[in-house]
Amino acid sequence: MLNLHAMKNIKSAKIIHLTLVLIITFFSCANDEGSITKIPEPIVLSFELVVSQQNTLRITANNTSTGINGLNSYWQFTENGPKVTDEAGPEMHLYDASGDYLVTLTVEAPEGDIQLSKTVTVTDSNEMQPPLKDATNSFSVGMAVKSSQLNTQHSDILIREFNNLTAEFEMKMNIMYPSQGNYDFTAADAIVNYGVDNNMNIHGHTLIWHTATPEWVNNFSGTDEEFEDMIEDYITTVVTRYAGVVRSWDVVNEAIEDNTNNLRNSVFRQRMGDDYISKCYQFARNADPNALLFYNDYNITFDVGKQEATFAIVDDLRSKNLIDGIGAQMHIDIFFPSATQIQSIIDGTVSRGLKMHFAELDVRVNPNNDLTFLTEARAIAQQNKVREVVELYNAIPDANKFALTVWGMRDSETWLIDFWGQPDWPLLYDDIFKPKLAHKGFLEALDN
Ligand code: G3I
Image (tube, rainbow, N blue to C red; front, side):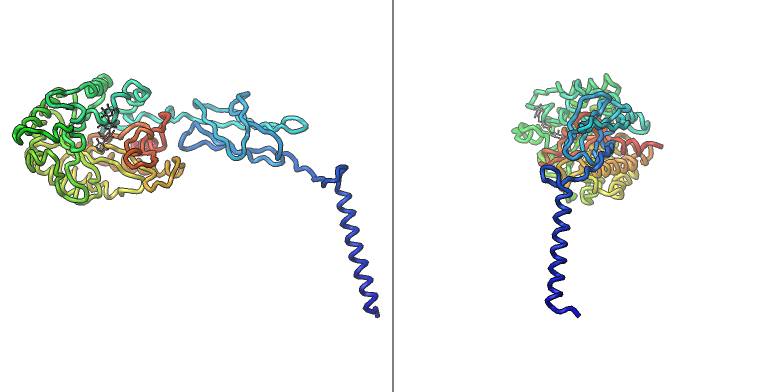
């Protein structure tokens, strides 16, 4: 039997032995400088290339190599192209044109450079996608323009893709009739002539709109009768000037209060009475009996009161043969309104034998202001919403189709950014004029 003293000695001996083993192990792993030698991880080069869906000329290169910590590395996105430092995280590269490109990652190892190359195929979406206007012959495809855009880069896309032209703001009363007796058709003429020269239909927008009324009209000093004569003269002058050239007019725009079925109490209603709308349509009809006359408003897909009031206005005009169609402004977002709501304005228009204009299309992707850039997921959601809208439009009987008009070309040019005071990307082209997924969604709806 071991006594307690002997057991203590054995325990001490074990501790000393363990300590010695640790010390020996430590020094056997130490180099000359006394630090620990790590067995170097082998260098294995690898990377991933992903082509963006949003912009099919853009790639993301992600270096997934192992064993290169502390070594310099760089990318070449074309064969023998310029060296781009490989920073931490994925690198983006934008190509100028479609093609197969050799992407090379070089690591400067102590024994000499190590390289890995892969080929990536990118495509210019301009080349991939046929022009919108060629995708259908049952309705025209419209774009809103400013006269300042006519001889710029916008023009290539306008001529290639669109066959219906709307002035975004220069064919409104505040621009065409800035002071009493003095018309200014400079910008309107430029837009109309451009449309004629390029075989486009021209949609006149808009003769009477409370928001674009010049101050002198709001403060008109004559009698009500003189006011009405002045309005008749204005509508006659404008519509006559463009008779035979402007195919269609929004005569009155947005006459109904939001969330009600009441007429706005505009200066036109105050001065000319509740029937001011049919008076204006009569003036337009007289000036050009061949022009198609539209009533145009927003939120009439889902605002039930507004939709009812719209149908009441057009029913009155129909009874006098003064209306040819309804313009449903499509200022919508990726979540709302629903296909059923959109269908409701189509049904009411078609059942009345009128033409349907899907006017002013823009599809907000950031209505809740939770984006600082257009994510791939939202770009796809926008593509889906645009496809849905165009499919609904395309399913309208041909006799009731007219045009589907997009409200602006590039995302950065949309009125919505100023209006809502937050970023958004609601249109079909990005800021370098590349068609977005939304553009593809438009075409997908017509691809049958
Ligand atoms: O007044 C100056 C003009 O003299 C100058 O030539 C021009 C140079 O850019 O600036 C002018 O201000 C313009 C303003 O309208 C005048 O009314 C702005 O640039 C112009 O962008 C502007 O806003 C337009 C707005 O209607 C008012 O006309 C928007 O571009 C246009 O998107 C917007 O469109 C309306 C539809 O017509 C009807 N439905 C709603 C939609 C959005 O508000």
